[in-house]
Image 1 (cartoon, rainbow, N blue to C red):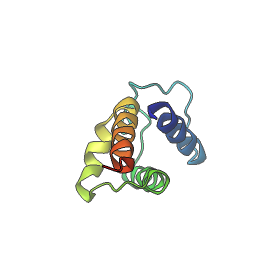
Image 2 (cartoon, rainbow, N blue to C red; image 1 turned 120 degrees about the vertical axis):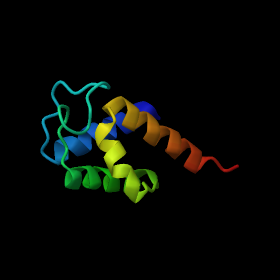
Image 3 (cartoon, rainbow, N blue to C red; image 1 turned 90 degrees about the vertical axis):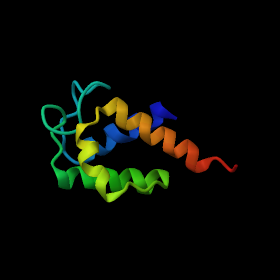
Length: 87
């Protein structure tokens, strides 16, 4: 699941016209990494929410900017797995 989420995130960043060459799991989403501005982070969050049926809290946006690609994809994969768990 994590690899699928990572692929989706990279595809979305490409679609949003970000240079994804050299991005790895240690690259931060915010400054000094992918360098997503708050609006772009919100756009990425909405795309992930729509694709995986998740909801990010409004106060999570600052935390997302500090996350690495690896941390973000792991968090999304974990939430998606929990979300789809019928128990």
